[in-house]
Image (cartoon, rainbow, N blue to C red; front, side, top):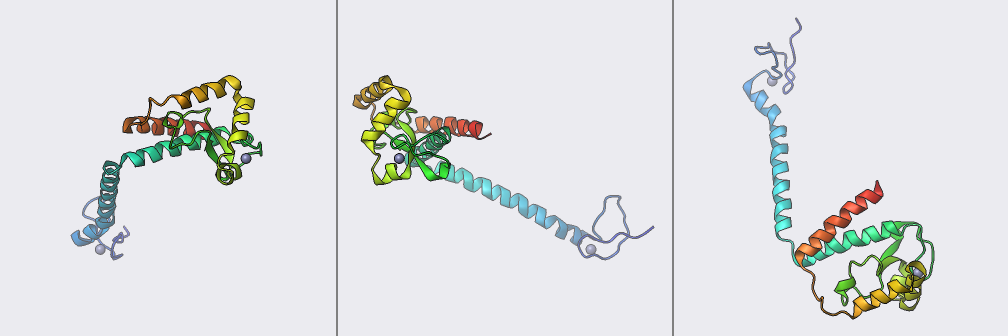
Length: 183
Ligand SMILES: [Zn+2]
Ligand SMILES: [Zn+2]
């Protein structure tokens, strides 16, 4: 019977156990090292991820929630026109989720699916929301009643801050909905 070669030092050796792949104890240790290293690295990565999670501030949670909500809006509006100027939105990297009401001043409308729509970068950035045309876009797309209800919500100043749990829920919910749309 042909003698097997040690997987570590490549020397031929005589098997004393059926599954033996190394000639000696020290070669067996050498072979196990990369596996042990991988296990340690994985543990380190998990530890870091946990730490990062525990250091998250409310601003981070808000950012996550906005990211997933706005991504969902962009996916939803792919192939429609910019809410303000009507230019066709064909690539989700090329347009924004534009808020009809400034995100910082109207927390009650931050995650409202009618108040946030696909908007071309020109309207969103250079015409700072193109608000007048935006209002017309809302009427055209959803009807005048929706515009009125958004205005009513905007006037309601009772809700000023959203809490961490709310942001977490929004992020999880829209992340899931993004994945569903992208299937
Ligand atoms: Zn060996
Ligand atoms: Zn536009």
